[in-house]
Image 1: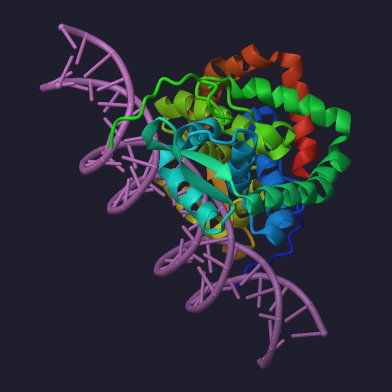
Image 2: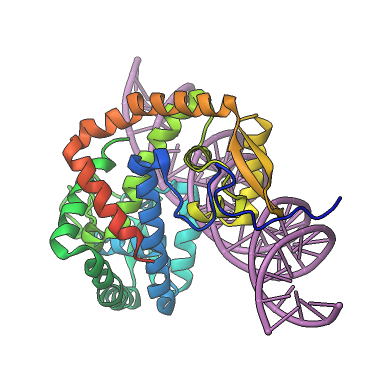
Length: 163
Length: 163
DNA sequence: CAGTATTGTTGTTTTTCATAACAAAATGGC
DNA sequence: GCCATTTTGTTATGAAAAACAACAATACTG
């Protein structure tokens, strides 16, 4: 088969060409799609910024909840974060191995663990949060504006009550 | 060991009690956390609503992009959706097996595939989208209000340019 | 033409997430 | 107090999502 003459020009088909921007079509006003892309971007930035602390979003959230509710039972912590309790075990194991959190016997219930931050965990969380504010949230507010950020937070809160 | 007297009253420790609501602590104004929870809720609702069509969010997004950009090359589709091209293969395979999309030879490049929806794929997408509007987005607007939804979409768009 | 880059694909690994099962302990009916 | 049921933490397992490396075929560039 002879090589067909190409270089026929960009208008010889009705199909989408290469250089023009891709249309989002139905996705354009689909909230779930926009939400996912935004969340991915923010998490990616979070991950980058917190690489210095070797801390992923889920780990940070666990430390934050325990910090704000010391002594809370394990099942209540995982429930508050929407993490099922089976998957929560390994997550907590690692935080405990790193001496950031600890399981203590829950008063009055020998099945349960009451969770606490260690002293190291408290200062670690404080440092991590400060770093996050300066490096991460600052960049978020650069692209959003701080009034818009508050607005966005309240809109997202409404959404979470959906399911 | 004798059973210790319990029922000592809720104020005998300084630790968090059971029934009171769990504080979010540092998570309260952390955008990434709120974003993730909201996205999970919306995807969960999407999944529930689209169970009738056996269509997951990623699959829907692929159909929508092809529909809006017929003939676009495979690599450009996956790139537009932020899906790496290796993982895109199986995704597209399934849509092709279901006769919703098809790979065609790309004019002028024998490496590439130009992607199209089949006739069945077009009507399927249309039906799915209509169903989605009625069952899913309607519920979203119930909790948000339609003005707020537009506001939210534009805020999210800004965020996506972050990473 | 030679070297380099791109495209689609396969294979592998790592996360993430949901589910089932289980032992120990707590709870509630009676 | 006894027995059935429920809760808690845990292990194991599998599905789905995502990242990475390698490769053959093809395209591009000097």
